[in-house]
Image 1: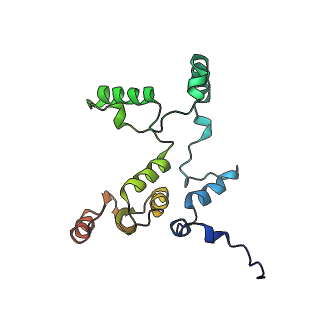
Image 2: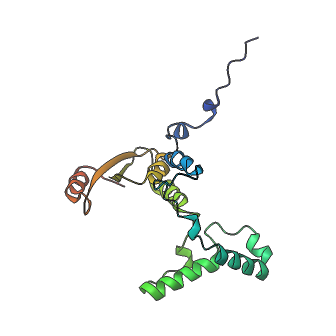
Image 3: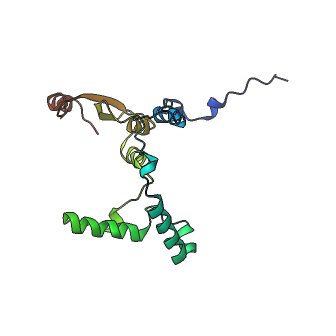
Length: 173
């Protein structure tokens, strides 16, 4: 009988997940556990400015109105009345006519970026990033194994001449 070899958990993970670098954001946010540290790297808002009283009142109001419905799973696109409200706001503020079916509610930028990558990026697709770029976007798109191309930033934004040159020779998604 063959002896048991050492357990190697990485053999169970997909090749795509094994190629993803460690989470830059997770590493940056570890330092925020230190109360003496003020980190601007993670983009964290100051918790003293959270509208906790207003959130508490809104939560209580919703739970009094229809607690069973609000705590139940809903459709994956997001709460329909919220999507309707967003459409009305866009119509009032920008004159844009959008239907609730065109609105998708996400839990934040990371989920939205992951969905964008899932829908548009195939392995080896060329993807353009400004340099420096948002670490969360790099990490979210890395899962889909694109070929990253970068363009330096200038004082007034991305280097347009370098972007034109790249686009003339390389199709970018």
